[in-house]
Image 1 (cartoon, rainbow, N blue to C red):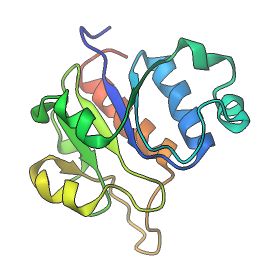
Image 2 (cartoon, rainbow, N blue to C red):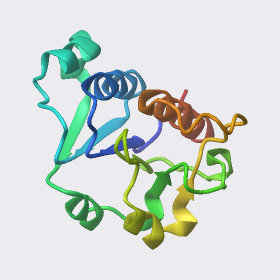
Image 3 (cartoon, rainbow, N blue to C red):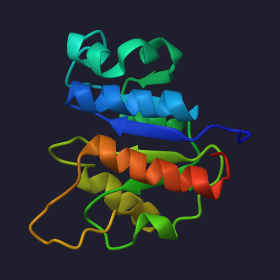
Image 4 (tube, rainbow, N blue to C red):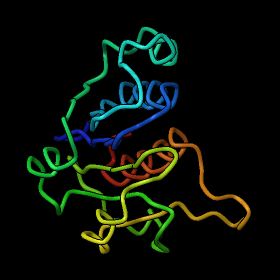
Length: 155
């Protein structure tokens, strides 16, 4: 496995089953799940536990009070922001062990002010159908995480 785990960062997630599915994904790949508060649910919510099943205790989960606290503790060169508001596809990113894949809320994505601060660090998952606005958060996290794992040759 890689020397430093990859991170999936969820900024203010709202839907418990998405977070539960991403927690399982992180557990299966030995990746870290960073949860940036406020959350739209309790981490002991029955739906979250149902989605995570018995995997929840085996996931490395870190909680952050807010996004500023998260940013203060991480090198911005290791941050990759996933958004529908850019044209640069995720597979053009050069991922390294320890990188953070950052996803916003299911209903709003990442705040515009964050994207404006890091325009060179923003990536998207291309979609050919213009009638589809976005993919499910858990699906998006899986797509990008497995590309990052492929690049760091840990899977």
